[in-house]
Length: 439
Image 1 (spheres, rainbow, N blue to C red):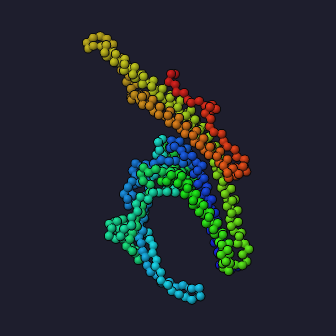
Image 2: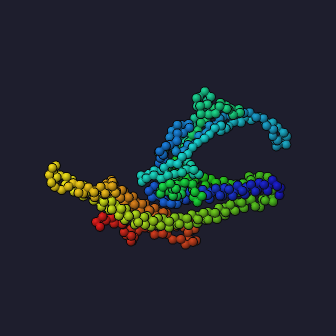
Image 3: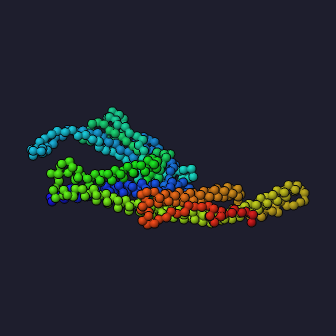
């Protein structure tokens, strides 16, 4: 077997492995998106999160070409060129020949872009997004092809030209416009500056995606690319068989002829093994997210149990001190009204000392604002608990469905996985925290 044949076979094997990896990776990422319920911003918890919202920023970027407001943009300038070349080649008879051919193409002569941290906002709130390291699926909002007489040609492009230039330049810009609807999948973590979550690149995250397309379109695109990689790998393994069928066996080593049908079979078997491994890991990961979802309910209930009584106690104390101020003011007003100038009566300064002490200690009357804050906190806390319950039920339902549908059912049967029970409010024994100011 010649070295050239060995090189061809080795290259084919490497190409098949890469195609198989691309297929399984795409399918795994698509399953991750399908298995993760979409959360609300208020219900974002630490870990993998899927969100829908709009891109918001207090100080957005101004794009280079279009001049619109964005949180991320990238642009490039390409220049057209064409040339005629003469090349020497060897024909089928082994003779040297020359031929002339025309070549053309586009060369990038300038490019750039910029990103800033921004907020993804929905109807429950906003969360900080740090797009560095994310896979960005952007929207094209500027594309023009112009000649040298157009002001854009040199106004936004470089002064130098490429060799054999045709005098045409293509200006393209894409990005994430301000207020654009976004679909996001990434890992939430704690912010360093305030007590709040953020979504940023993480080595533990399976995927960090920010897309201007909907979840359905993103999943469909991932699925198409995954199967394209798989079909390409299968086609490469079938090339020897195709050559034999096409009566081109003379170009194929005779020693390998009996084995021409083996590569497609090996590729198919490797794909089945890889698919089972991928499905098994995805189901296990889904089960772990279900258990995490249950723990998140306990976390939110614990937060409610600890936070609300403390807020109530603080507000109760604040209300008591405010009542002292109001009582002292009422007494002072009564004494001042009952006493006329030059007559004997109660001294209005009698309660001034105690009033001054209370006011100096608590100079502002804030009980009304405190009650409003408590009401907002109660509403937000109950929303967090409800979102945690909803998240758990959604992901538990997805897990149960995965265990029943074919072919996932066959893989789950190998490890005897069982669905997790849905959250049942009737059977839940923890009551809501009572807010009582009567004591």
